[in-house]
Image (tube, rainbow, N blue to C red; front, top):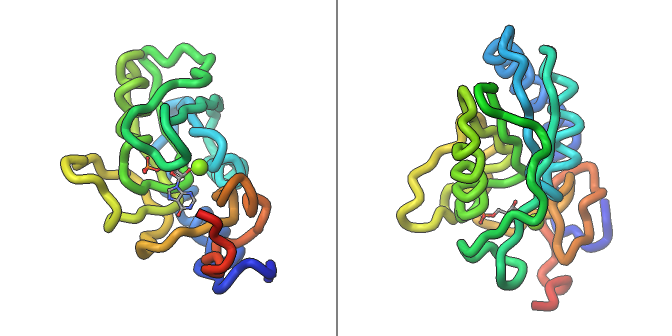
Length: 180
Ligand code: IMP
Ligand code: MG
């Protein structure tokens, strides 16, 4: 285990097993629909590459990159830094996300993509932290890997100050690691 990690919340095996289960559900859901699968950068990249291999239907992939105007925590003032390149009008779209926290990011991404008139738009998030949902946000993810408690987690794409994304598991950092 990495020296900065206090405990492992989800092991590599936990994650891979759940991705296989979700893969079966999504394979059935998207049979014959040739979906466009969109990842929200950067935290999703590791999940995205494992998840897409388990969705066994013809599909296309695309990415978008969003950020908040201020700071590292999402504020609700989101901006598209890099948009998708596919034309999704009339297409079945599945958004993949690393974690659904306050809900600001996914609410913004969803509204942005809905303006492009997809035939359908669903959300699959690896982690859901419902206890953190901002007041007034009622959007639910259609598919959830794991519900997690209100703790800051890293690994498997999730970062703290851009580090720890490469850990193959999801863990909780030791308190002394935090600098802010
Ligand atoms: P939201 O807009 O608050 O739902 O936050 C979504 C984004 O915040 C995620 O895509 C992550 O990049 C980041 N985030 C939220 N919670 C965590 C966490 O526990 N660890 C690492 N990143 C997080
Ligand atoms: Mg992030």
